[in-house]
Length: 111
Length: 470
Image (cartoon, rainbow over all chains, first blue to last red; front, side):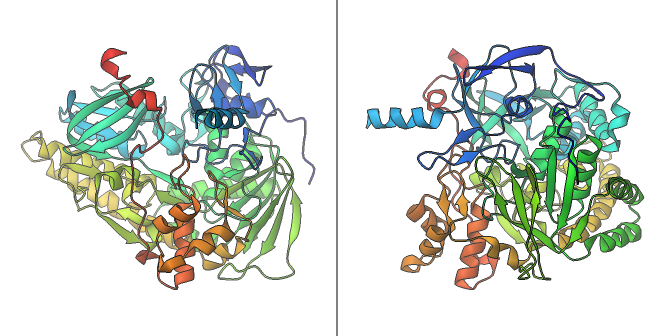
């Protein structure tokens, strides 16, 4: 079965989104809409990988999509680790997906 | 500390209906939800910054949700969005976490309507990005208006898959195949709907079926995904045929290219709140396993605490709405707010509707029963506890070591269940593995002790950054 690879991931029928905003994910600018979930913004920009486990380095993405499984944890500057599937996008949000490595470093230094 | 007459946790069908019932009788109602919008996982509303241009194009369920939420907005009900319950203390005192701070509220009566989560089903590769619950895909589609992927395989059991498939097709995705684990459930469901007079549901089902057929999506009974393949994200799904007990039929494996695999194997009640409170549980094999026991008036074993909806057994939104009304009625009576007729006529009407809704729920529950073969998909290196990355081999080794067949024993030995999800993903799976290895029925395996915080919150918030001195 042929898949149309040109299908846009953001659907435009029957919806008006919030105002367009910019956020950064691992330093790269991505376009997003105010109020949409961080997970949706990341996925729509072609980023289905949200983190890697430490120390195994296994990739993880959206799983339950409702704030239960904690697989989509990312770091947002100025806040604690957040669930990308629940947290709404705000203009200028700075997101990093590589927090586990950093967290591990902190742990090592404090023990 | 703030006192409220009635606190309701959960803004889905059950919580909304309970809130409306009680508020109509003049009860002071505070409704809290983890999300910024009301409606929960059933009504799946778009974010507050979005606007649906033509709500009627979204279907009956969406409209029903909008109407309920609109009624709440036009009532005296106070809604606290993005609010998490991190603990429930004695005397119905709740520890809340919102806007980065903790605060406590004392409720004279408490209705818990936290809903359900989907059943996690481990198999090799199920942790790869691109493998997600059916509900996650639906939330992306309906709330966020984003496709979960372009090439999707659906797998699981029961009619929900048809809905997800037709939504995906409508949105322009390619649905590669729909895999239904059981053998011919749709006919029996259709018959049940007809005999129960659920014409609306029947029409809805036919609509999905037609959409799927028009898009030429293959629907395969007795098929399950046995392995998710890919390096950094899902690239293909290995699927196989299963027998009546869902054991894989050798020599039937095929590989389907896909970037997304949605799993819909039914629901488990969210019991963290009621367990934390020490409410009595009971085992209902066809309603999600362990559920919160309640009396005919929705009161739990803890006085003044009521439940409504999935937390008392998986029954679907129709059941949840009626139970919400009953819980609201019970709470308003207990608060001395019942009318001169004691709201008796209202209750009789609600009970009649509940009876009808429960009959359908029983049929659906029986149809969606998970069969033992599903556990055999778990290989030694399949991750069972996703948070702590614990493979099945370590869990199987821990089960029964020193004659300990408890979830707690497995947790202490392997760390399974100690991560941020607190066992929500692995607990039910490990219970099944324990029951199988010990050779006992599932209802003999107790859930692990519920601990605070009910969901992770920052230590700083607990350490004194509370709402009064923010």
